[in-house]
Amino acid sequence: MRSRRTTLAVPSSNPRFIDKARGLPADEILLDLEDAVAPSAKEEARKAVVEALNAGGWDGKTRVVRINDLDTHWAYRDVIEVVEGAGANLDAIMLPKARDASHVQWLDRLLTQIERAMGYEPGRIGIEAQIEDARGMVNVDAIAASSPRLEALVLGPGDLMASINMRTLVVGEQPPGYTEGDAYHYILMRILMAARAHDLQAVDGPYFNIRDVEAFARVARRAAALGFDGKWVLHPSQIEAGNAVFSPSQDDYDRAELILDAYDHSVTVEGRGAVTLGDEMIDEASRKMALVVAVKGRAAGMARTRRGDAPEG
Image 1 (tube, rainbow, N blue to C red):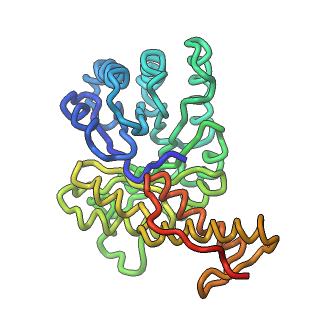
Image 2 (image 1 turned 135 degrees about the horizontal axis):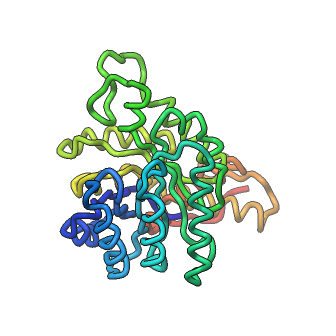
Image 3 (image 1 turned 90 degrees about the vertical axis):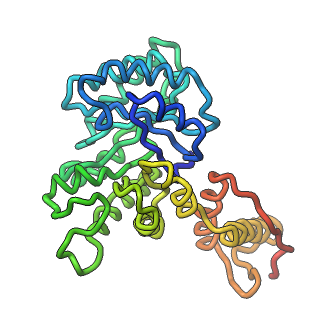
């Protein structure tokens, strides 16, 4: 599992921003050819993406390029030029405005053709599908099942809010007048269920008020509490908060690893399916819950600070 606690979106037409992104601690760098690039700059931006990927210096970050959506005349050239030019240094393509399974399948087939032509390993380049309108939400289950390349479902809140006529001008905030519950809860859970049913990651979309880091953290905590793997960030000031929100605490990570150790010892050494760890009884369900926390901690590069003795029978 790739760590996607924070995905930093970078306009591909801005060389200064690209250079700065190399040294920032975001897990994933998204070089954007879509909304962040003016129509007149899109062809030059493709060249900048190829140059940036091939220049290296990304230090283990997941390298993703967001192409233009399939309703534009730029999309196919985005894929061809970027993958032929820098496919060996690319981890995934983000497909914006994914409205049904055929959109992802189109990208999958095109990637396969290019990989074969270029001598790349078939299937190595992943796909992230961005859910950005009502049609995509309705078809999210089919989208999630559409391709073995698919790695993540990503919420695109701005376009989605516009597509359903939500009364808000601040992306990520509650619409004025909505005082009962959370207007985004169904949307987040719908994406999360589709993602988990097909072993995909789920990534929350950006919070546009880049100066209010506490508000960003508050919105991020909502998604993290539900089980999302990470969130888009639009500014370097949001990265530290995002990484912290989507990482387990050190105590939780240590506890999860202890549970996994104890359960493994119980099953493989003692031949039992349940065991006491401290004051708590743990079993297979405990193992599954602990594994979620442990995997996220490992992906974030966390190290254990304590180990336990053999569990009691």
